Amino acid sequence: MKKNLSLSILVSRTFEVVLYFIIILFSLRIFVYQTTINSDITVHISIIDEFVKNSFYIPHPGFHLLSYFISLLSGWPYTVVVPIIMASLVTIIIITTKNIILWALPDFKYKIIYILAAVALSFVTAIYLPWFNKSIYLGQWGPNIWHSPTMFLVKPFALVSFWGMLVFIEKQDAENDYLIGIIASLLLLGSTFTKPSFIIAFMPALAIYLLAFRVWKLKLYLKVFLVLLPSILLLTYQFIETYKLQNSASYFHDKIIFTNFGVMKLYSTNIMISFVLAAAFPLSILFIKNKLILKNPYLLIAWLLVIVSFLQAGLLAEKYKFSQGAFIFGYIIALFILFVFSSIEYLSWYSKENRQSVRPIYIILAGIVGLLHLFSGIFYYVRLVNKLDWL
Image (cartoon, rainbow, N blue to C red; front, side, top):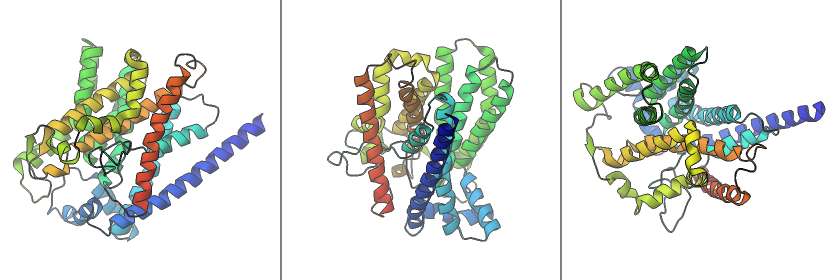
């Protein structure tokens, strides 16, 4: 028995390493190509040195500073460093996702399940219906994109800080709750420093959850506020400098305006259909479990996060960079987090304890919907590898 278990672990780890290597190679091809065209990568690369020289303002310079210091230490140009960082982040996101699934569902006999689930979650996108919208990404958005350097760096911060904050809230009687709170606070600060898209949606979603489901827990409210405080202070500075003072030269200076889903309407002929295509798998989990979601705070807050970020993306925009959809990115991150915790819920249905709680036909149907997301994502990724798309 021990020999079989050891062999299973060895095969699983070997498969994992080989899979990461293949994903890194193909992802490098995507990102290297994007350094040769007018893409988000080339825009971000072009402003790194100006920012370091203090002649250009970047409100969220985490990725730029990381690229600068690695380039400085290695002697490699940004066109080499940035694709390597982004390809490495693809793997880091997969490993982070795998460990959260393992934390939530530690009892699967075959460890390869965790790897496959995490890899799938890093490739899923909105279900592709070419007769509805020719673009796989624009209009539907979806939980994964392959062109934004800052999004790649903020995703692991967002995922772990989301998880960490909820662990902090749910385990208030634990001996190490202060340590968990400090770690969650630092991770949230890191996500804000990298890209504030996640935090601006997460704070309202968290507030709604606390006020609705942790009624009059004033001590908990204070603790959560203290955890969020460093991010709130940084976010306040970013907002004032970016949208009010505008004291420095910057591509990022703009004005926030209200819009009636104006950005989304630029790219989708039917916003609700696009939403369903982007969130079909989590919706299937929600319809199957419905009221039982109240017993799963991770999934509940993930849904609140998606609702808040969807409304922000629809009702808010930047005036001068309107078509770029600055508030769409929070919605994309929220979808990714929702997919992770919806997948955890789905995988739990295969455990011995829950096997009888969900009808097999529902498990099959939800699985088919999830596969449609995955096939669409793989199709999109292949197009990116073959240089047929970059958005």
